[in-house]
Image (cartoon, rainbow, N blue to C red):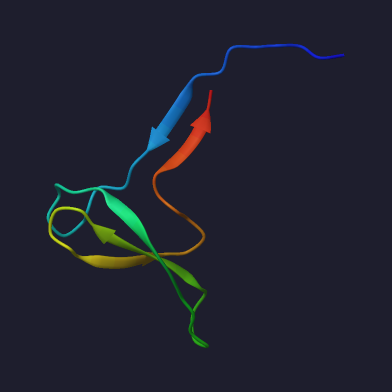
Length: 64
């Protein structure tokens, strides 16, 4: 049986650790190393800083 319920979408952004202003967005590049876990590369919209996150692609959408 189907049952409908209201869900509130929540968007989690990652703010740049370098400049503290821009959102980090995925570049589409997955960095793979034999030393560490694969990382999803993200770049800051404001300053261009590049970082990798293990297992996460921002923004993340969840529902409450």
